[in-house]
Amino acid sequence: MQKLDLKIFVCGQLENNCYLISEPKSGKAFIVDASYPAGPIVDFIKKNRFDLEFTVLTHGHYDHIGGLEALDTSFYVYHAEAPVLENDLLNGAAMFGSRITLKRPPCYLQEGVGLDFRGHKIAVLHTPGHTPGSICLRLDNWLFSGDTLFYKNIGRTDLPKGSHKDIISSIKEKLFVLPDNTVVYPGHGPATTIGKEKKENLYVKTNDK
Image (cartoon, rainbow, N blue to C red; front, side, top):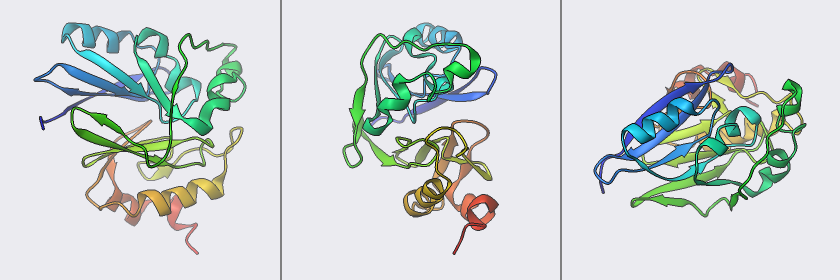
């Protein structure tokens, strides 16, 4: 298997992280979270002549899906996230007087049924809490954690359908069992590692039984 490259774009007023994973030799690529505005991402793809195969959404909030229409590709989302994806009140677009219209239907994911990119397996971890259908994606030694786990922080649970109990359980049972050297790439903010968060993330430690 060929080595993969990772390019990070910080997009929009909420400073979303959009991740472009590519195999330079073949020119194939995919994206984790379609943040808005997507112009710089599209320009980078065109400049490097990447063939964008698909986009994977960690969840359906507007700041993670607003760039979908600019990225002419199929996209995946966890099946439980359908109500958030399709409802402007649940995905937050309505809070900003906006609407998100998706012209293409999603491909639905299930836990235990991962994706494949050029022979690299992408594991789908269902991590409810921030939203009911939030997922994290594990690719080799990388974990794309969406808005579930941040650097010394966790995702919000005060938005519609959020659950503090669920997000803590998701982090402890699905993420903190991964190797300590797993590199965590969150939906916002800097990267971290599983080992660092196990030791220093007070939002999780204060919920220890």
